[in-house]
Image (cartoon, rainbow, N blue to C red; front, side, top):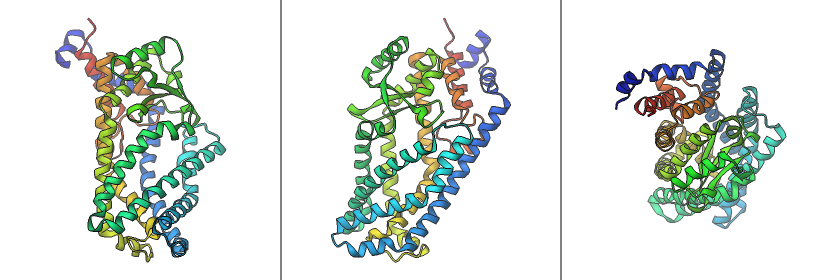
Length: 393
């Protein structure tokens, strides 16, 4: 039965139901969400400007050139220079990070995290990312020296291996440094979630609740890890603020990501983009280096700030493609949840809670360029179309 026929039979109108869900937020909440979302999109541009300024400052200090001259071993040279470069960049960009990731979030009521806790967690994140970046670039610069003209292709392969390893180890070694992950408490919610996970082939001990409220007031859940480390995690914000049906349908959505192997599709796309990025670097590094006043050659670790800026620029250009991939996955996960739980109204009401920080009615071009998820209005409409096509018996 098509949605239009079902609607005629039952008297249910998906468009009217969708409008009721979205309008139920109120004009003030919708306007606030629109301002917050539009501001986030402008932050992408200003982040690129900030990255260019930090790159210029790091290059002009000549600290990396002097450090490179003092360390003779190529691998140790790469590790030390990249370590210092990332640490220095993190320090110089701290004012921007504070504004974009804490002050603005607090101003819109999206976080209640104390600034000292934010700074502590940020420092931990910088330490981890700096060490991982240093290890990764040791491999990249070794490939530049030894792999010849196709170093960029091998470097893309190195990225794929590194990304897979990070996906495997992240939930075990990294994520617990920032949040506390616990099994879903005993009760009807756990019984329902475990049953859903078991039916979908997800190990029942891989569904967790975590203290996401420490960093954010957003209604959210996620799936992370691969193989034995894979897990579904529901923020305590969502867990406390949702009905039983909403928890079930949100879990069904995350199970969909797991069952449909979205993480591997994303790794594949990122690996292809990494190859394209390194090819871009191979062809244009010298031009960007001159623009920033750097004398570094491609094989010189002292040029890593320029390389990182080129990566930042490349990712900004590729953002619509990355977002399109994510939106496809979100639509598929929504449909999986509807198919396995058949709770369209619960899914819709849960989705509306995310409209507080992701404007529900964007322009189609805005959605295509900047949205990592389909608009809430579009997702609720899909749920209502499902409801129309699958009326209660």
